[in-house]
Length: 485
Image 1 (tube, rainbow, N blue to C red):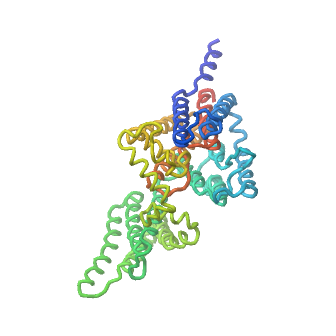
Image 2: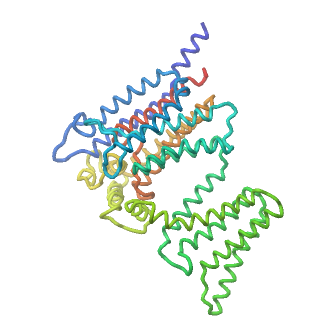
Image 3: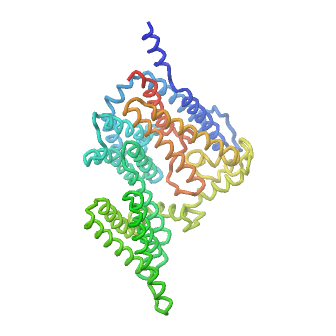
């Protein structure tokens, strides 16, 4: 009798806080879509199915039906067929690449009459399921060559296919699953290396046009940064602060010699001095490795050499790999170009719209920039500018705070899972939502390049809404049954 009652109680223990956040965001997004697509000359009802808001209402209904169905499926179903579903998702991506029409330079949409859907959106929860299934194998250890290659392939394979579809933004979302690997045992140094790569790329691109001697200013800055990164790695991971000070002194002394030489009227190439300093540091690391036989010095040496090679490849990657419109977006984001009539137009108009909202905004349906359609894609990727114009700084801040509270709550749910499968999937959900939030808002206010990432549950689009709904409610279903697993 007691056991029967306990099972009923556990079956009904859905996390209603998460459901409440979901419903709140979906409804607020629906009203925002109506505001963004509102036509002053031909106003229609929010329920008009011929308008954007009306179509979104249909997708909202479909998403609720899907959410309800997910909550009725036994959680063992997701674990049993996770890898099969992932394989089918990869196959669908490949088919899309071949047969999908070119829409705005992207071949990522299936078109079935009036309905369009984007398979790449559904790969987010499929990747999360696949990773969860792999990690849930008995005695699975991430830090082995075989397992690292396996989980990397699960993440990178769909990312590469989506890049071939010209959907770089979605591919970057897939890479956010690296945060899951970090939670499951990937060393913190991996995140350090990723951050270092971003910094080196930004510096290499931003200061690539100014030449100083043998190298550009960007290369000079990066060589100095590599030496500083080596100092940090020795200090934090080898834990020999004196060695770190010696490395810093070695590099600094070469710059000091160059500076003193310039005082005697000799023209000094500081970029050459930076290269000599970097070589000296590398030779010192070789000496330390041979003397102490400590592999940490070898890995730090490999990091320094790889970072220099990466620095030298930045210009080639930027100019020869990226498309011209992608190059321009990065230049605009880094302040290298204005281009207010081209790639910078979206961000420029978005900033104007948000700035015009002031502290409290102009009021619902009273935004002038959005109503006059100055902001492109204002009901999809740039929907946050509609919120900023109509509800001001206060309203925008409330939305951001609510999202952060939601993401923190999801992280807490992930941490309380009683299975590795549930925990890994939960952190996959957290990674996707956090990445979308940070990049979308950063894109709208000009802090990151425009890469076409929607605001979760707010932006117009059936594929996006369904994808996020499935992603979230599979997690809530797993959490609902966690005490019975």
